[in-house]
Image (tube, rainbow, N blue to C red; front, side, top):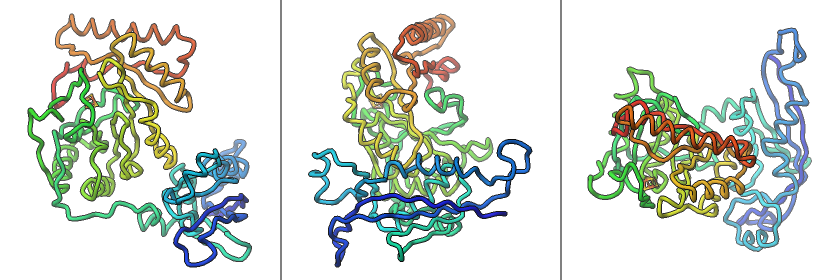
Length: 397
Ligand code: SF4
């Protein structure tokens, strides 16, 4: 094993509110950062032979991961009283969600780079010429991530959460994880009431929610997933993001501890803290035909949080009408591809027999044709609702 290191410099400001000294003032630092990687030099005879990683690539990846964003920015916790005024002046602000001390920042940096697949050994961040904080990746992994993330702490496992249903294994039939073997955990409750909702039983009060403890939920998931090797959970609803608090945090922590990948489906109107622990998020804003169209402004806080924490996400819009198509295009202009991955699908189909399946295929083909002919929609991927083609609109599949 060989260690390699590269140093970087950037300028940034911060304010440590409630600090009992000078750091309570807004002030700046010329930061110096040392990223150390550890690995075996490549043996294969190609352009990268003999490298742990090409220094040029390391530089590009560090810049893209955070450095360009942080340079000459105000690194905020997000609670600073001065923030609204700074924002109104259009100043460069990065809201970290934690106090921007060297101790916290070096952990965050190490975690970001590690999550991007770099073989991080340690990160050292000089705040001044003589003062630095350093974290070893080994320690960071042992403690389960940066301490500054306020990671959800396991609480009493018998706190209850409202569950509509847990089922699987089945195939995820939509969006970015299409085809993935998955269990489904459908939480009860929704902040919208879409006219064509295909899971009204998860919010309309006709069916009472099961109030299950975190332990019961995890046990059920383990029972369903273990024998078939299903390691992916789709957390859906209703809107699962309306649930916040200790029990929900615990659920996510315990599922991650058991090694599950968690994909979340939400219309994007809520932004709970536990989202930064999940593996992927599908934001599914509702078009006009739903009766309660989701605005771009409503999903923006969620988009920003996912970007900040480097959580993969995509947009998925269900299309029923011409107006829905126009809505999708307007939203696409605000969150354009390829920076934002996009999927669209025809409105819910219930392909119970051959005739209805043929209708569903034909609706899908129509949307494909619209996308193919529209010069603006270069990065929008039309997908069917695959599970409905296989199993109709049955529950539990
Ligand atoms: S947001 Fe989803 S779950 Fe909620 S009412 Fe609309 S379609 Fe149904």
